[in-house]
Length: 114
Image 1 (tube, helix red, strand yellow):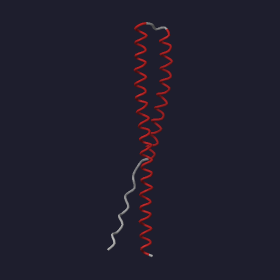
Image 2 (cartoon, one colour; image 1 turned 135 degrees about the vertical axis):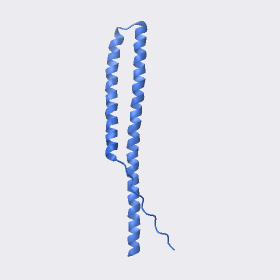
Image 3 (cartoon, helix red, strand yellow; image 1 turned 90 degrees about the vertical axis):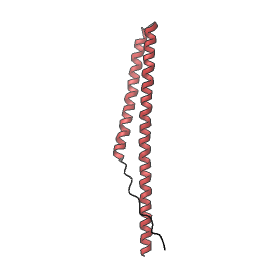
Image 4 (cartoon, helix red, strand yellow; image 1 turned 180 degrees about the vertical axis):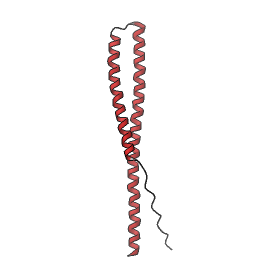
């Protein structure tokens, strides 16, 4: 008695359009953060030119904190972007694999009928 082949798995659903939109939004946000960082640095340089003593220290501390927060957010956005890209790649590979399984099963079934 021969066991029947397993039925093919359902297609993996992954919205590549939504993923592309998320990647694009993350890329745009990263570019905006980079532009804001350049503007922040220009303002800081101008403000620090005339600053002395505790005020200069305060401005420097504020700038360092803003840099750290922006870099943290930028890193998070890059991580999200990579994860979405990776998930899309995995979904595509899984769809191809499942279609190949279905194709193999169909070919085996057709071979049994001939």
